[in-house]
Amino acid sequence: MDKLLNSESIKIKPLINTEKLKIITAIIAMELESAEALERMLERFKDCPRIIKFFVTTGGYIFVCFNIC
Image (cartoon, rainbow, N blue to C red; front, side, top):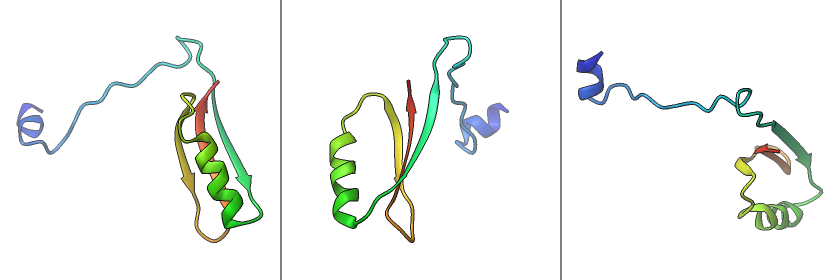
């Protein structure tokens, strides 16, 4: 294990125990009507402290975000 860590072949990262901390997580997906609407949505929520990560999918104007409540 030490050899793998020292060679940076693996990393150890902590995870938050959301159940113990009573944190509620949610995944929200929205289909928007246009690229402009998608841009407005991204701009509106880009600095929201509750959003952990957001994604835009390929193929349509789909906005998906992973957040804490």
